[in-house]
Image (cartoon, rainbow, N blue to C red; front, side, top):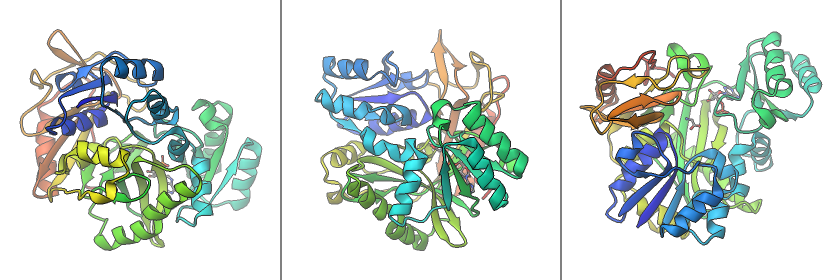
Length: 421
Ligand code: AMP
Ligand code: GLY
């Protein structure tokens, strides 16, 4: 098979590495890919949002399967466009990807189908939001932009002034553009967070092994929210008993709810969960593989990923047994100085071999370019250094040892991956 992966981050690199293990994958392309990905796939210079060019390229090159990995092309109907052109594509259609791209949609869905989540109200008027927050007078309070915001549209306000600043930033200054036309104001929940990715063909659902993301920029969960600074798998808080509760009260009801709404979801459905004192609740849904969750989950997959993708597209997932290793995995993200705010690009990276790798770990490239034999930084999150071992401690030790051998000016990474709640 000839396979095209849409996207350019560490997640896409991890997907491509796993696809490469399949005897069925004869040739892999990435659009647009990145410097590190170019060592594992042929990078094609087409933007991830360019539906027309993507479909034309797939047609011209007899691509058998397109894997659409990022949120924005999914929300924008990339899968619909490819299918319309007669191309097999993995990922939800736009009408189902809305489960991620509109928090108003997902919150209303959960309320309608009694899926546990934080209490909330939706607003389209900044004055009304503040009136509501003042009346409740309960802090912290969570303010979320409705639409996609690179994982940065959520503000946990500790007091009235912070809430006011959040509402101004999202609704008036339009920091996230139209994503901030509506906001969701949510009850603040507490408890360990768990990420569960699941394959679903719209009929059955198969959860993958669990993981835990570290979203804040700095150690001890300080600093701004980021796309994710590191991950571990499995998540130590996610017991078999909790998994069973989640399957019954969250996972299966969500698949059924999407079907009832005429928005059948096929692809990878991501459940961002919080294990609260009142049971597991949904913090967010994503319509895709998580980044950097994928970097720790897919290395543990033993079953051929191409077979799973085909089973999802052909609605035969229930017939497939999906197997995982018992190992633990850890991924430490090395980010550009300044991320998630502004940062420089084009800084030379040392300590990588000619394939962008280093000894003792797998280096998934998130934001790099490769020029004249050298890798340079080209994004906020630059590398995801990933290792597996029999125990989490050993996996972390291996990953951090590899991190020590890689350098670029301004690099910052968390030293406490796998150590915080
Ligand atoms: P989201 O983009 O919705 O996943 O939110 C980003 C992060 O903000 C989550 O991973 C949580 O750490 C935090 N968060 C979001 N909603 C809540 C909530 N209702 N209570 C507490 N923390 C939250
Ligand atoms: N790591 C969180 C996400 O992919 O949304």
